[in-house]
Image 1 (cartoon, rainbow, N blue to C red):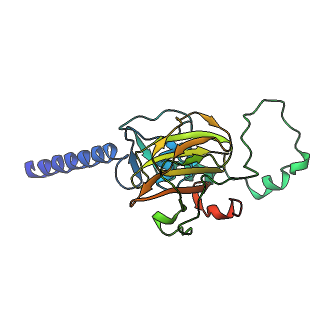
Image 2: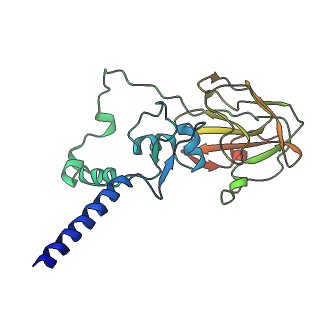
Length: 239
């Protein structure tokens, strides 16, 4: 009898430890990121090819809220949000009763205005592309533009600086500008950054000076659409 009771106690202790470890490690492992000193929500989203607003939603934080070193962020949609989305989908009968867009009256409540997508883009610096865009290669998710060391690097459209630092491996001195809820642009390998996070810039405003990579003066330039890299040459005017 004593041996049976002893075995039960051992089983209960092991189960308790397993549950405790599960709770402690719920924010560890694949799909989680530990915030570092120079990180911003935008730089983390950029590193992993995510949409910054989506990343904020997954972690139940405001997109403009500060993040802190040591903070843990989910890099994928939480299961709880997936379950909630499924449970709140309207039924077929509800969908049929929903008014059409032209039948909905505008609300008098004030809503935040989002910046429109850029209508025109300009080149970030004078020079010819050294390569072409290739989304499957990390070093080709944009274009490299040849030039002279120290030459001006400018914003390609109106926007707001959401990252200015050198904390992303492989980018050197990097500036990221948010142009709208859809588009971001990035300027890497810079010799010097001339803007700080939170600054508003106009198209043509100098934001950095050209640096070099592999002893070649060049600017690495990228455009992201909803967090995904796109070919800059399809947006920039023909030279």
